[in-house]
Image (cartoon, rainbow, N blue to C red; front, top):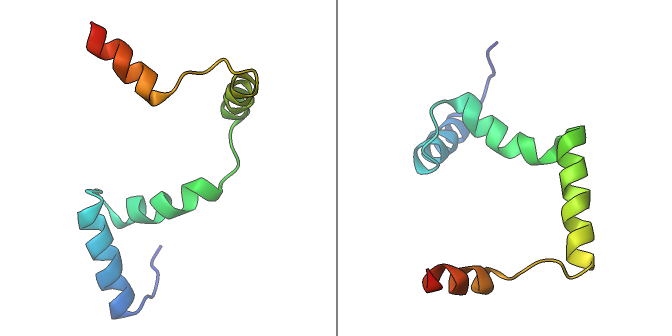
Length: 72
């Protein structure tokens, strides 16, 4: 499949491809599309589980993780 795009668009996509260290233009496009796709059932379950843990206060901060790591 081919897409017609303006030269300005092509240059912008090429720059993004290089900056994001992506292998193809397809990867650049997916980089922007993927956040808008629906989650799989397993991902949605994990998201709900994490949200429940957060609401119950069963999480620790990044700073706490770093502090624990520094002790080791």
